[in-house]
Length: 146
Ligand code: DQA
Image 1 (spheres, rainbow, N blue to C red):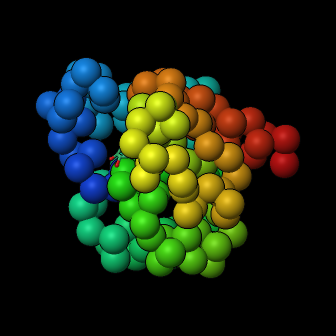
Image 2: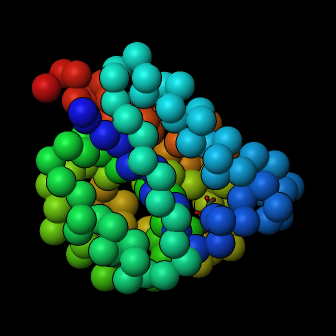
């Protein structure tokens, strides 16, 4: 069976509780349900992984086998700092779409730069948790195109 990974980085385990004015009230479980609804007509199974640790996110990316059609990745603050995560994305051939719930470009300048965007298939920014659904749809449609 084909699979899609929803990958979340640091502090996103607190989604729903964390700064709800910025990130909303839905939890990762809610987000995964949204993505499952998008993926199910494509007969693609959704896997979910969150870690606050850079190395665990890297290990997770390295561990993906050919059954994975893509990764919907919110790297949290590592977006702006992690050359190691960028290299991990470059090292695999599975497409990754970067997602940010908030519009990082309306926020502090240190959030305006992504070290990961150049090695991702695309980016979805500022559309709330809907961004995970939009990214998943793009990966599923890319896969269907073949
Ligand atoms: C975020 C934006 C990042 O700048 C921040 O560090 C996060 C969440 C977002 O989803 O908007 O943790 O990735």
